[in-house]
Length: 205
Image (cartoon, rainbow, N blue to C red; front, side):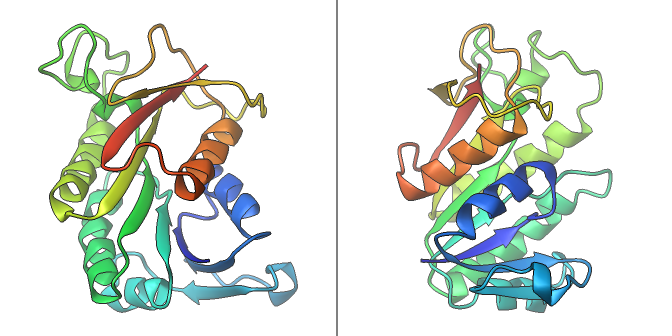
């Protein structure tokens, strides 16, 4: 399988990349040149910008599925790049995408008509990241593609435990944290063994 990977140098993205590179051909978009001797054997690297339509299209061309682990920031890079990713997927006839979101865009258990970041469940005062994730999620939801948004709660580096809980569209009850390793592992597993197609999935210990 050929996989397009965005955000491969980030915390969760690097975990996903280290999984996928052993079993699949990888095409990834990075901002800086990577030394050739550090690359996996069956790998193509595009040095460019996720906000550049040509760079995104080149990364996705010839792939079978897309993994997106882009971070949010105050410039809304995630929600600004998502239209380009979805457009390229349609152009290259790719239907499957797994992305990393945040528990803030899951449905609230206490106030089901609200997202968690809008409800009394929210722990963070700033909603900038959640709003960026929400815009990206709404684009995926309207895309008609086979998407999954993996939504971890508090995300320390931690360690790979291998035992965790998941829940469709909500965070499992009393979920407190999940490591980057178990989150990345689950994203890769969801791509290989789909269980939550066109769903958000909350993940925690």
